[in-house]
Image (cartoon, rainbow, N blue to C red; front, side, top):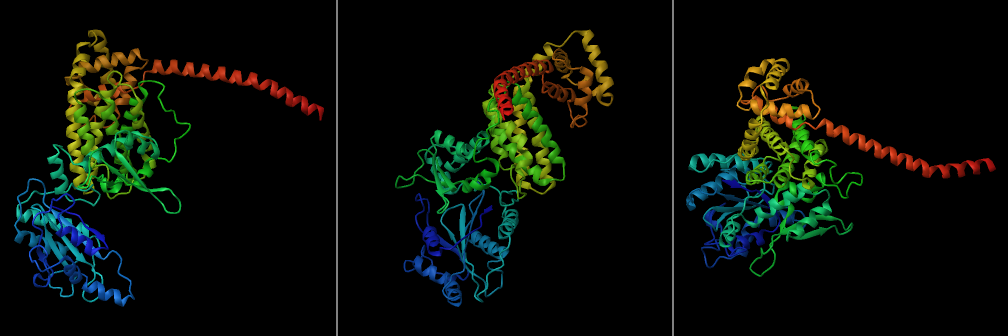
Length: 565
């Protein structure tokens, strides 16, 4: 059961909507199921003599008195609105049950506490099988405003109790950072059009994927438009700067053929223009290399940044940890787009699931996660993952997602922890699909007995506490192949094992050889690095020489001028 508290200032407009046909003729049999006093609330849905204007005047009675007291000034945002919807698959409640729900919600939120004769006036309107709308005017009979601090949290808590008592689906407690749930009308429209998701959900996914890939705010809007999405920006009256935006899906129109617009913040809280600007600069950074020099670079950079994100989750800096979770959400979209294969569907599902885990009530320090966000953006321009690097990256995402679930659990973020668990299952399935044939190939190419015995000695010397478990792991032959390859790339196997064995997760890993295999795979090729450094140094030297030669005549002319003086 999902409550959604909001505030406004137009009681007549809201009443007309509640008792009207709906934006897409989705409202059926609108009527009042409960009110501050059933005898005193005109019901335009059941009484032919009652009108929406009459009901609005009755609700606004105390607002009008307060307005006169204030010299003609209405209290700001005096309309309280709370739709309450059952979860998909729940049974339909009766009018009597919905009436009880409404009374309990207005009591819990402070709108109309039980037994308070001077409470706010309110009504609960049902115009669909799966939800009601509770509306109140937030001026009490004594002229005071109700105590509605944290009313959204209190409504959620009461709905959790109602679910248990009514035998409904038990939802996770939230913190008001979840994106809006599609309405019944949106779901019905999607079904009529043969779509599996609503226009709002489709736009949200595209907006997240684009925000993850682009580098600037201007690029964000340009790429969205290239996908056929309509973009409408709202400009400040004085500055002319963009202060908001709305998106419309291709072909999504209302009854008169106009586009159906969704504001960025209505898609998700962190898609508002202000939240986007925390992650996207206004202009391109001039000295940032757009394309990596080596094909392996973006993959290795992202793996290193994801591994570093573990440290943020283990620290006491919640703002930095939250920033890394948000950046990791972006990274999952880019990993899914950069990793071809049959497992790509699982990666996209993981990115979608993790969207709920990427934000919480903790404000993120986005600068702390700059390295992870930038490394992930490099994947947008990267070629297919060379060798096993793409698999090593998937392996790193699996472990960070598990750590994210644990981080949220420790802080009581139930919805986020559940979302991270769901993303973990998708990533684990995708990793298994991608890694199984690669590990099998590495096993087939395991080195001969002599180098294998040497690697056994290296493991016992470098990681003595885990040596037996490592060599009993079915992935041990694959690890020997990876160690042999690392030696050809300029690494010392024993030193590499010491370094990799000191990192996290080895003690708790069920397959420690598999863990080591992907950690070593992610290490850069030292011979390639050395060759690249030599080329770069030579190019710099030639450039310096050329600059010196061109500067010599200038220097001589300056010296001559000095002598003449």
